[in-house]
Amino acid sequence: MTTSTNEFLKTLSTSKIVVILRNIKLNQVEEYVGLLESNGLNTIEITLNSPDPFKSIELVSKKFPKINIGAGTVILKDDISKLLDIGVKFIVSPNTDPQIIEETLNRNLVSVPGFYSATEGFKAIKYGATILKLFPAGLNGLNLIKDYSAVFPSNVKLILTGGINLDNMSNFLDKSYAIGMGGALFSEHISLQDFAERIKKIKLILNN
Image: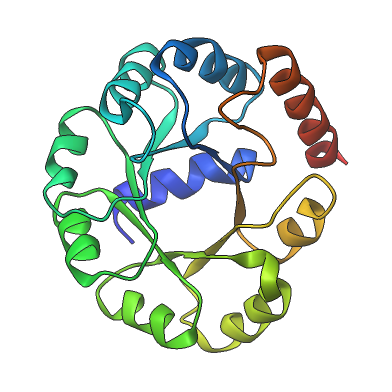
């Protein structure tokens, strides 16, 4: 694995959660990300279908240099160089696109392509990915991860995303390297107080 991949995994190993901030507004970023950092949730993905995603990512990179900041829903190869310039550490794509994987790795960034079938998983591995996002995990993820772990190379790490919430996150954490949490933690209209309450509940689960 590359140095950047090892550093990403080391950081993620402490929190076990990729926090997905989809539709976060620029004027929310500082307070909400600050709350995540103070609670040790230091791996954060801002999706490119959010309002002002590049400005939001750049703000996190400059204001919170210790945060493991990534971009999600990356589907255009040309976006990767722009994201590198504003401090992104990892690239999450919703599909298994060889161009995205190769460009990400060529830029010495961490590639986290999305997959669901074994065919997609092996395709991502073929093009160099060593961290895969199983999505949507809620459909049959606990069974799939058992099957895939038996056949994928031992160095491949799986992050389960989609359909994970406060009620089932422990089950998914037990079976994967980490999980991604989006709507169960953050939504565009959630108040800072409610966000803090959800973080508190997640921390209780993580510490048990």
